[in-house]
Image 1: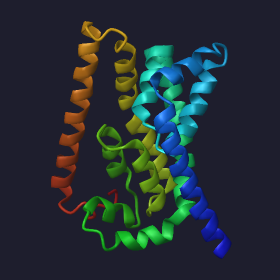
Image 2 (image 1 turned 90 degrees about the horizontal axis):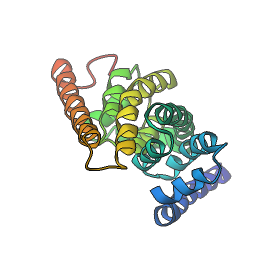
Image 3 (image 1 turned 180 degrees about the vertical axis):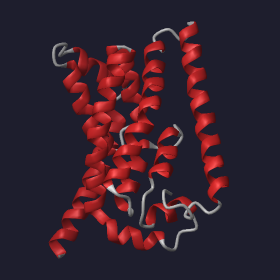
Length: 220
């Protein structure tokens, strides 16, 4: 039991240490260089990067921008979705191993309706979907939060897939168009991003108004 606790502590320290290292050493230009040096295996390298780097709190928007500039909209979106789904499952199980029970107990005293909803039993597809559609909700944090709380893998995977598809196309498109920030395409990409933020915020308000307390619905 003590050894398990030490292992969990070591994993958390390692994640934070690697996160600090990546924050200072890896950016858009570095990722593009790594992918560009291996043209044949570039898609595979990118998928592996997306599957692993977010575990260490690496900013997902950077990966999306790299996908847009390196592969274009459609191929970049496909590789991003594949990498994101692999990564989501990995982070879910890492979080579940690190402290599902301990964290769930802390949630019971939380004043946040969202946290309490994630902490209750039952399906949570709608809530996770809304959070996935909101670009302002950190991708990494939501992955770990769902793993730490009482969320079924089925609801988590389905909501994650449905939620990240539109956001992925918009963010990868923004990355592709960022090569020419004065173009009409870049302005349109920015507009679509703003529209996604507005639409997801509206959806969250409607969902909250419909259910009152976020925990009243079995799907929330």
